[in-house]
Image 1 (tube, rainbow, N blue to C red):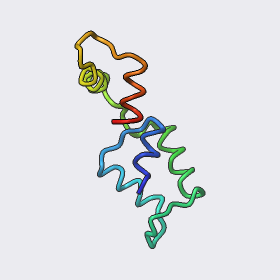
Image 2: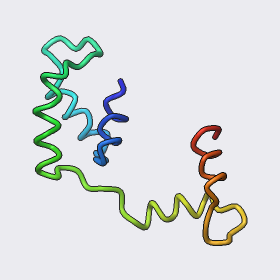
Image 3: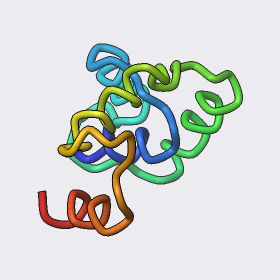
Length: 88
């Protein structure tokens, strides 16, 4: 159930459908909710080497940071970012 977080932490941002396809490749014949590292590594290595999933577009990322900029000053402070990442 955490495969989406793991894949995204590696810089890949698949759609939900692509994520389900990836999960089907690495899950065993009988889904248990767990993925064995031996199955995950080769599949994920291929995904990374082939750049199978597009990164988040820059404008989408910029819009996310603009939403955090409550004072509309064009930036957020380190303290604000830490607060958003740990508390929000």
